[in-house]
Length: 234
Image (cartoon, rainbow, N blue to C red; front, side, top):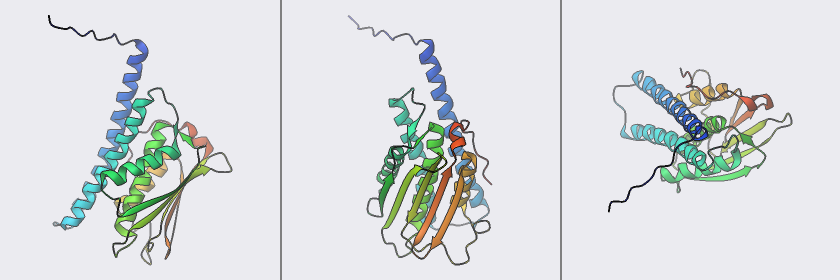
């Protein structure tokens, strides 16, 4: 006799949860599409032919973005009613997933100083994770032109005003002399700045011969930031 499996009915609460999950996934995929379109625009303005290494680097960056968002959704799947995410745990898990998925274990190490007092919304976690991922990938490519392994320092904690401060730095050679963030910035820097603006956060960058450091300061009033929509990237 054939076995018949009974599928349980989906109640109103489960239906609302499913709608919210689908809406969140759609928004996050739209953001990834916007980021890829930004890379396409940069390519259209560039040379007709690119070295294989440059193409591979761009594909690695795209994979990194997808991995980051996929990691967030796996985390939310285990906590479907979660309104807040521990940012410290999420960032180190996300960076570990990025390093593992792109086989970067021999090229990057991460030193963490992460507080357990940093809670953010899933939308904020996504944006901050993408910013951190961009900075890590940029450090892998540029921190040590000679190809040495790069050490990334990653920290987050509460600021005096009750907001959240995230710092990411590397031990590389820093930005080229005369580099202007407004004129010389590539796709990665523009993306970081756009995501920081969308978060309502202050972004500060400091560079010297001992490395490149980013500070992202999310003020206390931004804790109730509206859910992310696809960012306008130029």
